[in-house]
Structure formats: structure tokens, C-alpha cells
Image (cartoon, rainbow, N blue to C red):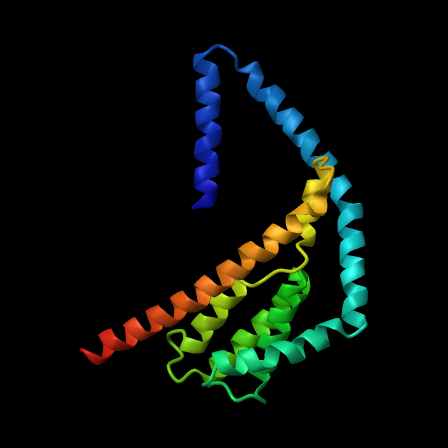
Length: 198
């Protein structure tokens, strides 16, 4: 679907340029954008290496494990149907902790492992369980304390204060996570009410 949208936008741009008799603008914009994309990528390499290296040191120093201990009571409360010592709980805790630290690459394997373990506990394998839906909502809206990628993009774009986004990111992601948890609870109760009325 997204590819079709992009193709439509490209063809529309070419058609408008052709109707205005300025088809050369398309070529100039294409080459200029390609050059800028390469320049931004090279600038991002150094910045991302620094932030990810810093976060990797924090991970090796035990910060992830420390945060996992802090998150565990909240996760046990949020997922009452999952035993506290089940591998699914451990994978979910590590996924959420990695997301909080902005370690997206580290979070993905834990997320996949968590879904596999949750599927083992799922009594109706043909549809997602309540725990799987809650975990997906929590994962996609998770609180982020260190938005390394956004900081890198801002620095590459020439921002004089690339880390200025940290405070607003923490606030925005905290709000999104709270809304996701509340919405998940409301829709779950609504689904149970509808199902019981059948």
C-alpha cells in the first residue's frame, strides 16, 4: 500500500512538472535529494555510533538489569494471566526496558521472543490473546528516556541543541503509554461485554 502511495506521488509530480513545461526540475530535485540523503546518512553514522556505544556500555554495566527489576512489579500487575516466572514475562520485561533506554535494535529480539512465548500460553492460537494485545500496545507506545535516533537526526540536520528534544520526548511517550494502557483496558472490557451478550 505504501509503495503504491509513493508511486502515485512520484507520477503526480512528474505529470505536474511536465504540464508546466519544467520537467528538468524533477531531475534536479531527484539528484539533489539523493545527495542530501547520502550526506545525512554519513553524518548520522558517527552520532549513532556514539549514542549506541554509550547505551551499550550502560547495558553492560547492568543498567538494563536494574531497570528490569524496577519494571517487573508493574509488568506482573499489567499481565495477571502470565506467571511471574514464565519466560514470556522475562522477554517482555527486557523488551520494555530496552525500549525505555532507546535500544530499539536490542528490543526487537526480546519482543519476538515474548510473542512466541505468549503464543504458547494462548488458548486460542488462531487469534491474539489479551496479553499479546496489551504487550503490543505497550511496546509500540513505550516510554523512551533516551531518543538516540531523534537526537542523531537533529544533530545531522544542524540543530544547535539536538538533545533539547529529550524532555518533550519523555513527556510525549509517557502520555502515549498511559493512553495505550487505558485504551487497551477499555477495549478489552468492551470486547468481553460484547462477547458475553452473544
